[in-house]
Every structure is written in structure tokens, then in C-alpha cells.
Image (cartoon, rainbow, N blue to C red; front, side, top):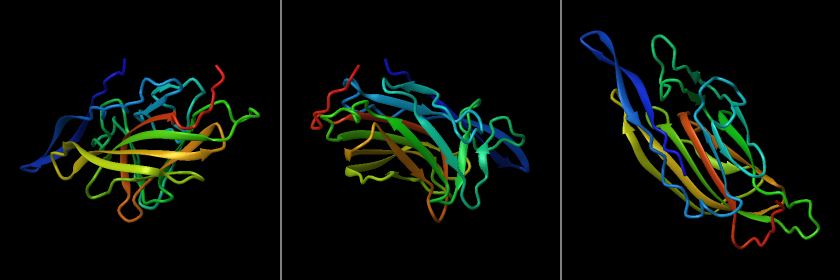
Length: 223
């Protein structure tokens, strides 16, 4: 059963010269893809509870291996937002953090996701991979990020932005969700690149990834 996660953000409200903590519940995961129950479906969830530049997934369900993530920081980055900082930073749920990536494309999170185990077989002709990626990001004064796949284009792409919650001081936190297909993948993995906005930068709280080989690939997995 898919677990439900709740995020809350602590910010500061200036009232009569006093800094008061404000708690706002946020982030219910967007609905999973229709193919969530398909054989070979993979899922990875990142909540960023520490400032490691190679964060591990906080939840993983992948029969083909572990995802590998790397954070790089661009110009004007404030780095990882510490939930224990004093004064508080914009970090998301207490105990977890968020990444102020600065400006893209240098500011980015790259996540390499195993998607199969058939690339070395004689009959292999390539994967077509369906993906759904959801990012929770702050929208003002920074901007929401972009998505690409290293070495491949995205086909049948759909991008939607849904309000996660209104920040009590300024701006909004949004779910930005992409669905797409990556065609003719010739390896057992793909590398997703979540790049910060090149002008305003991006602040990322959560990344959730689903991927599965498309029904039209015809590849047979080896289990």
C-alpha cells in the first residue's frame, strides 16, 4: 500500500517587531500513475533529511537496484535548509530539509534510476519508459524547476502545477508533476535531471519518482 506522507513548513511572521513561528501542514503526494501496480514499476522518494550532496532515497521500491542521487549548487545557492537552524530556515517538515539549489543549470539534482535488467541480453532492442516525477518547490521569489533526462528526449510530456499550500509570509509551495515517455533507452538505467530555474533559482523540498517500461517495449525482464 502506498504510504501517505505529510510535510509541514515552518516560516517566520513579523508581527509588531516579533518573529513568531508559523506551522502550516502541506504536501500530500499527488496520485500515483495508473500503472503503479505493473510488473517492473519502480519508485523512489527523497525528503532530504540532511545536507549530504549524494542523498539516499528515503523510500525505495525497485527490483532492479538502488537509485543514485547527486546535488550540485549554482550561483546564489543557500544550500541545504537545516530544520534545526536558529533562526529557522525554509526547510519543510521538521526533521527533514530542503535544497536551495541557486541558479540552474549548474544548480540541479541528478538521480540515476535503474529501470530494467535486459540491456545485456542478445534480443534487447531498447526500452520505452513511462515516468511520473513530482517535485515540491517554492514559487516566489524563486521559481519551479525543469526536468530532463540525460541523453534522451521526453515524448508525450505533460506538466501540471498544483498548489501544495500558501506560505504564510509570501509565495506558494507547489507540486510540479511531469508525466512523459523516454524512448529507445539502451541501458538499464536513466538519469533524471531536475534543474533549477536559470534566472530565479529553485528551492526543492521533495522529489518522488515513478518509472516503468512501457507496454509497447516488448522487453522481457529477468527475475
